[in-house]
Amino acid sequence: MSGIALGRKNEVTPPIVTLAVIGAAAQPTQNNADKQAYTSYAQTNPGLCRVVAVAEPRLKTRDIFARSHDIAADKVFTDYKVLLTYSKGLLQKEGKRIADA
Image 1 (cartoon, rainbow, N blue to C red):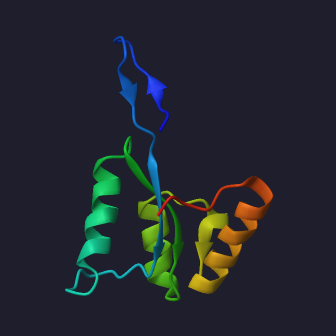
Image 2: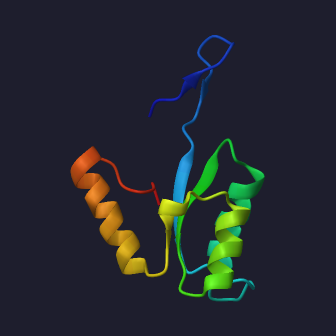
């Protein structure tokens, strides 16, 4: 694991973990509590975690979520299958997926 060296000797900043979210539910429920926790953590800890992609079929929910996480337009999808295909293409072309998790 590599990071960015800070001012103090041997002190390293961990790399930012990136997330792709499938389903951007507007309201927390028992079924999506973990997802809500991760996205909330990403918003309050941008130096450690960042949401970089979303797949959500509902236009309004998708747009609100994408704006609130400052997701680039080319990483906003209406279908999770398209997101996964995009990620697979990135892996083949650039050797990396759309996100870490």
